[in-house]
Length: 508
Ligand SMILES: Cc1cc2nc3c(=O)[nH]c(=O)nc-3n(C[C@H](O)[C@H](O)[C@H](O)COP(=O)(O)OP(=O)(O)OC[C@H]3O[C@@H](n4cnc5c(N)ncnc54)[C@H](O)[C@@H]3O)c2cc1C
Image 1 (tube, rainbow, N blue to C red):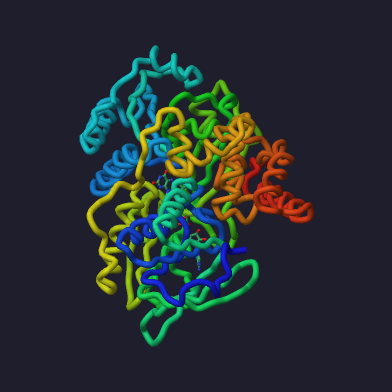
Image 2 (image 1 turned 90 degrees about the vertical axis):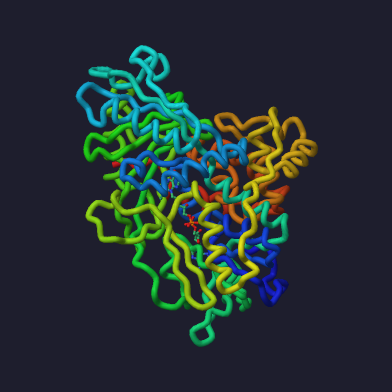
């Protein structure tokens, strides 16, 4: 199922990255800039771990500011500003509103002070106050008794899986090799990690590849990497779940953030990919449960949060289009309350191996450079050079979204080679049919969920995972991937079963 016969790979690389989430993709992108020969392997699909299941915010994190995590907040805010400049169409400004009520804490003064510091860190003063009248014109469904108004401020949003994909594609264009559906185990000689043993998940083919350094970016699984030496910190996987509603069911024009009445945790709903994302939870996750999915308790907790802030909408779990859950890779410091655990990344090394876990989507570039500095202690050629733009962003007014998601070269080819019918938008989504053709042909799609859950997010933003468009998706897969009838039947059955198991709204 991997893109190439493993025997055609070179016998050695300067660096081998294990894990195709945002951490691995960011490291791959920065490493290839040093001129190194780099291989990335991902055991499932790219971004199929936590990096397609985040809240999709590129943000400083007001919560971190509240916890006085100054460095994390400052770093995140700076990276947000950089990504807004360098990834237009993929990372976009997201205006936020936080309604405030008579007698509730934190009050207006505290919030405005906090936001002033937040703005100061970003060097842009955009936060302010909206009166009750102005607020209700924008968000008429908010709870009204005792409503004073709202603070407003700005963060950013992205499509997390697409951000990973774009980094990987750009790295591959620059000479890296990236394989999905290939699992790695560490190979050692004495105390030295010397490379990896790869296994193609479909064919079972195996191959040993030598690496001057191996970088373990396997996220919440980082301490379980087979063959790796002892000495990893104890990880505490924390599950976070989200609902996706249609924009008619949960009509919010901006991101609305408020504190859950049960535990005062911040929760939020915001427009995303033509729908509305709402979350999240923060609970210990038992990794033996396999792929994380929203539990009934989480669904009730989130629905209670909606009933509190948007009582008139009377939303139920069954009103949602879909759900998704991810596992935060957090270093365990033994805190009782999971939400008090630090979200900073952790790095540890041994001869021939650098491990990285934790951290945020937002700060992937900083993390990648820190990892390469650490790797350069063993392989000096990997020292990252001067800061370079994350992406070569072509300013493009008309098709900015497509340019951001695919990169200028690919977007230009897609636009000039697609028929008008292929450029039509798929109803209820921001995607055009040509994006499905493009992804199937050029983006290492091996299974139907690669196409519908990560290259596009149709499986999250359409009813029943996009069931109604499957006949046309079938034609695309048969043309672009040369699937026959039997393969399509197997893929579509598997996709619908997976969607039902992991993404269908949870109903008691
Ligand atoms: C609910 C939730 C909300 C979040 N919201 C935000 C947010 O809004 N903004 C933000 O900045 N951050 C957010 N985060 C944090 C962020 O999503 C994660 O820190 C980030 O995605 C972790 O990326 P990663 O690459 O380290 O891990 P992953 O994305 O999990 O990638 C690790 C990959 O390694 C692969 N792998 C494991 N073992 C092997 C092996 N042996 N061989 C090959 N491959 C292997 C896995 O399959 C996986 O794909 C959120 C996290 C969660 C859970």
